[in-house]
Amino acid sequence: MSDDTIFDKILRREVPSEAVYEDDDVYAFRDIEPQAPTHVLVIPKRKMESFADLADAKDAEVAGLMQGVSRVARELGLEDRGYRVVFNTGPDALQSVAYLHAHILGGRKLSWPPG
Image (cartoon, rainbow, N blue to C red; front, side, top):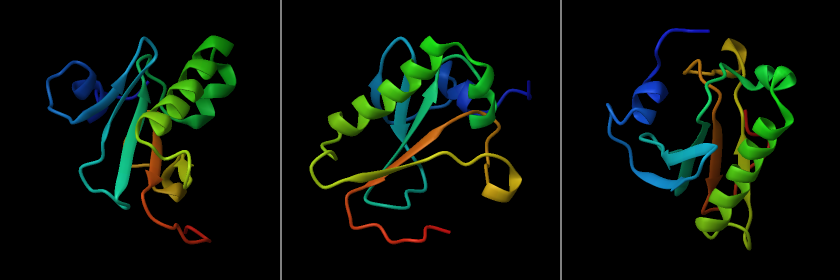
């Protein structure tokens, strides 16, 4: 497992964040460099480094993360118009923090391809 990350510090409330949702499994907060009008990060409370780690996670952990992402999108009012969920995994995908996190992007029409 990697060293302490900014997300570890956010979960411990050592670094401030603008929370939008929290439950037993996940914590969601606004991205400090938003790439869309709505840009929220959702992190599991049990640390995993990347999406690749979900292959070895317990089913309940995977379900908790995915349900958390869905609940956050609902809380943000994104369901009617649509939104994108992005997991960057590894250096080629520009994963900037070695802590599994989902980006929820919405609030405008998103283009394709994304990268």
